[in-house]
Amino acid sequence: MSKSSTNFNKYFLLLIILMGSCRADLESKNWASKNLKDQESLAVIPGIFELHYVENDAIAFSLLHSLEEGIRLPLILVLSMAATSIIIVLIWIWRHRPFKELLPLILILGGALGNVIDRINNRYVVDFIFFHYKNINFPIFNVADILVFWGILLLMYYYWKGAYRHSSKVIE
Image (cartoon, rainbow, N blue to C red; front, side):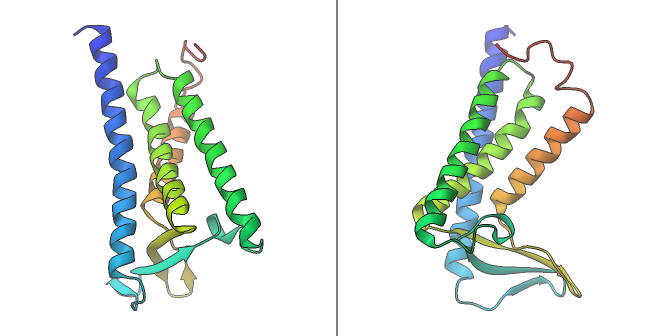
């Protein structure tokens, strides 16, 4: 197989993962809006895991929630777009790296785009996945948050393993 064919396959697969992850996030939020909004929490594993609809007009852990909406929403959109742009630039700079090194960035970008699209369409992000145990309540989150979390974890793992430090093509 030629190098250009291999690269095409790599980029095509990354694009499919990006589109699929973003769609999975948006479809899950759409499902939650239709089935969980104005309903009692749905216990999936009683006492541990519930589906609980929340409209999050702030960012992680309710940061910026105290700002008035006229300032909060534009600020969150600008910050989200800046972070998304940085990820896109990093993907471009690293475009010749192996698939496994680009995958974490694609997962992060898929989650970021899902939340940006949700925030643009609704002025908030739909969160609905809730884990808790006894008196420990974890923040309610969504599929985009899972994508970003796993992307960051993979990025840290590959960095720890030396994949990013020892690559010969850091900047093109």
